[in-house]
Image (cartoon, rainbow, N blue to C red; front, side, top):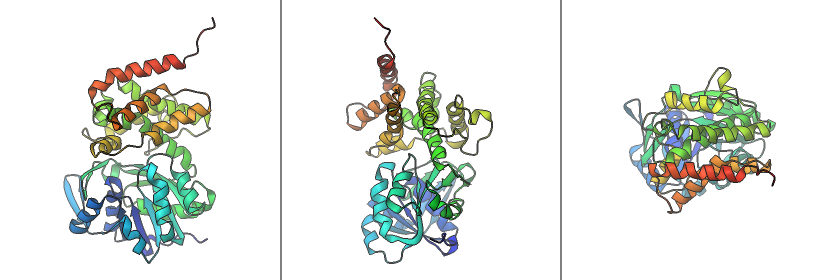
Length: 360
């Protein structure tokens, strides 16, 4: 199979045009490329059709006219896409790829630009030669249909792109070229390790701040919560070591601390708070809950718990975070600072239960 064509001659789709998908798609459209938005939120599609995609960034409102489709409109498509950027939730990856698969050119590719480890799902659906994966670090929000609040400027937006299988590597340069319209892009050979390093951070930042109903930065400033965030990430680091993944810097970080398993989580959390989020930036999990949707806690923190269990190891911090997240989503608990003490107590209980008992 031949490699992808020049981006200037490609038909591109962004499947999932929430905050990050719409922001990236707008950047690609402003570069003069042929891009189509496809989304499952009807009001979002209608707002984009009526007003264009509106992006607030750096104190400026940028409006870009784009073609926007509802999911049901996909069945009417005639011309195939050469490149598809998938930015749906990790738990929606399989059906989204199945939906778009008939509309991808034989020489085209699909890249999952998401949190979580959904790259294998993309490959499973699209094939080893057409499935790519990417790490994304952009902080943004969408509370109103068709309006993106982009908190990360171009200079503070970062991606890593790679192919889970060698057969797909020929498409990596084209995918990277598209994403370079939105930020810095690193082309990597070991995309699985890069993705897991982002999951390490996600495990410690997304659900803890959502449970307390705080911005990421405010959560990290709580003396008793910051260690929990770091420990959640360190449990993910432990699994990386068990499975032979490389502890490597992401976001363009440098220095020994960013590649040291003992200091990676603390280093990247500080980097995130100082350079990549605004004081009021809410995690994607908290944004989901505000909109009444479930979050990706099972795909992020659950991957840590399930992975360590395969090695006979416990993950008390991530397990407690999952329990609290499920309780919030099922209406058994309300998000807020009142959860802090019960969460700390539950972690302590799980640690005690998993500790080896002395012989009698």
